[in-house]
Image (cartoon, rainbow, N blue to C red; front, side, top):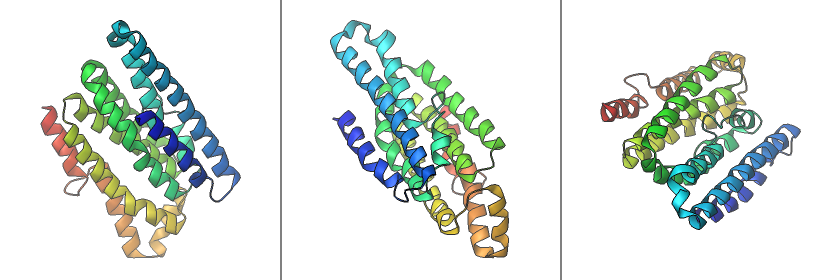
Amino acid sequence: FLWVSMELNLLSFVPIMMMSKSNQEIEGSIKYFLAQATGSAILLFSSSMMWVVQTWTPNFFIPLLTFSILLKLGGAPCHFWYPSVMSSISWVSCLILSTWQKVAPISILAFLIPTQNNTTHILAGLNAITGGIMGMNQNSVRSIMAFSSIGQMGWMMSLMAIHKPAASILYFMIYATLILPLFLMFNALNTKTIKSLNKLASKSTLIQSSISLLLLSIAGLPPLTGFFPKLMTVFLLT
């Protein structure tokens, strides 16, 4: 049922990505479709084999299933398509891709993680490190937000690894709440690169302050809202 739901969701979201019919958005939509189709094929294969050959399940097919979910999420080490697609589509599509499109894969991932705790801790650290390091060398604001999303995924996976799904859901909801106004402002201002952010100072002090506070909050700077889910994660991990 979840697999069918994700495929219907994919077929519904791809036309939204191509609404402006620009070559860049069409290219991003094709990349997204290919990545999702590959992930779905691996997901269907591994799920089928888990049902057919149940004795092999713990040793082989669950890691393969986890790989397919990470590919659909755009999480490290399967993140190669995610920043590229994010930098090619509109801010509204970026918002949907960073929030709603991740709900079903995250639900499956939360179900799989209790069976492989050691692997999950490694993947959580890999996502956090990849998001932090790769995001520093970007000029596109969309790419920066893509790597930020990968980093946030690492924090959520660390909560799943210690069997705290409710805390992980709370973390995701706070993150989604923070990026909603930020992405909508970026969309209204047609923000593309770091240089375009520098020009905001001449437009409105309120807008500049709002964007700065939201970015700092997503980064987890105290005492802003985004700091508290990270603080909660640290307390739960210790």
